[in-house]
Image (cartoon, rainbow, N blue to C red; front, top):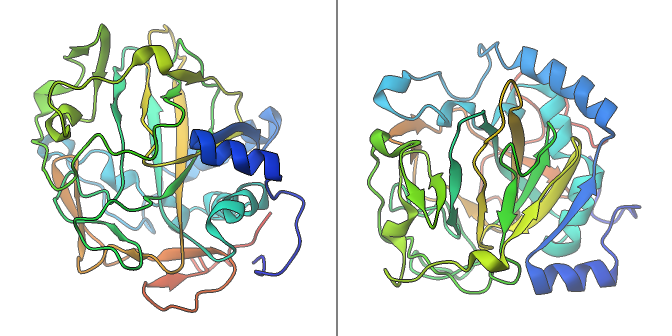
Length: 318
């Protein structure tokens, strides 16, 4: 584990930090070589088939929530546990959030040939599906606009415009265009069935337009930046930054696999006053969830913390 005071080689420079605060993101940044990423992903893909130590049980996709059970696999897959603490990531995140960091969630984001793009959206408290905040910063109430979370999106495979790369709108992180106190309706029939502003886009059966503060507002697609990445590269961005993805219009086996790690300072309360995740049309217990102390120390004690995987293997920074 990296201590709060240990000097590193991966902190953001003053110029990089200024760019981040101006634009809301930084990257692509190289975390692994393509060869290292190939080796890592081959092992992770195989080990992910074993769910005997996973935090959440697999669910029947016919009753919703096909994605939630793939949350937080860093809690049982050693290489992912090491990834969330990789100094090439956490030292840069610490430049923004401070030295003491929790990784509170990870998610796989696959996009297969024929899959729609992801809706433009922002996330602050992550209350959009259940109506209950999943993050509360100090001094916030459930109705406040907060700081959200820092998302580190790593390309486990090559990410191109053809196979559905991320898109962002630089500088959009300081104004929420969506009201997370509202709730979206889940409708499986929406998946791969809607075209928005000329682009097939959706959000796992939800429609983010239901949360818009101004129902007539539309994001300016001309301001969008497409974040193409080599395998092993990442981008760091505020969750409140407007972001989306393109559809996968490729053919054959050209799928895109992203892995998102989400970080907050240890002072933030995660899943406050709740014992389950309610998203994507389903609900899963947080009984086996713990935040990972990815860097530094926790002097607050707000959250259930682990510095080990569920299998008992120590998490170590790379």
